[in-house]
Image 1: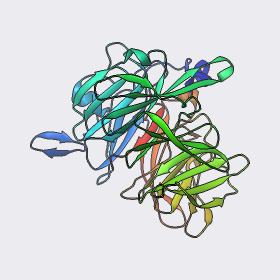
Image 2: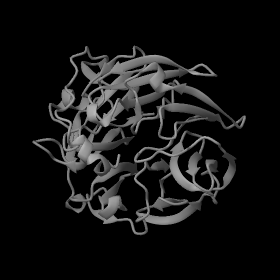
Image 3: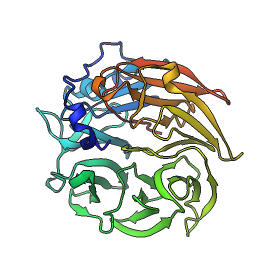
Length: 369
């Protein structure tokens, strides 16, 4: 979230969401706690405080709070924004890094146990507010957002190689602060306009043009990249990354809004041909790309009054197809919140689980698969 826009409102809030004392629902392997069959709810924390990550078990629906802290007895960095899985590790990035003895800008931990491997804060990222992270081979890519006058942002992508050398990826000043995609040794980053940057070995190798301004990209398997757009063309494109020309093989216009205002997560969540979106509201729609039909699935606030606003949260489980929506009642009472999990029964989304007052300014829902 571009939290600078809401600093005044958020500054009125005090405190930090406390760690839950709920029984941990985890798998034991040779006495080692592992987190291998569920969803991860990453939380920014109130602005200027440390983030934390929760874990939702697919099998029991139990929420384990503050996973990283419980394993390592140390908080994540100040304002955690994104995470990804690669090379048997989980990588977590925070905007402001070390705070009151916390970890730095980037944390690497074991993907199964969340046991810390290392934490570091490259000097090149100081003052750059890193907010997205992706890993291609041995190279780590970090997106940065520097806030300028009149709520403008200066964007860039940096690459950290296996030796720790940090270099700017030239030509990425228009890369938006939405999640980046990795496929077949390449990094895909959407811009604030109508282009997707294709990055290889630290350089922009090519671009993919779209008919509208991008609001999100998602990868859901089979070499297909999904792109959502708004503005002159409000719709969704299906892009085949297995073709040398990254051809847009099909696109659908959609009447409902595909925006995600002030969000740093994609405006869409995808499983198979089902594309979920909410347009920055609490109403979730599903577009069936195979049938070219769109239907309203649920108004989240009607089943969970404390999930009253959209905040970086819409995601779909790549294994079960369950839809996640982590939300707040309001900025001024952010500690009153709800994380809701829905099952798609074909025509509606039915509430499966709800976790009250567990999130703290959610930064997104992530999966290891």
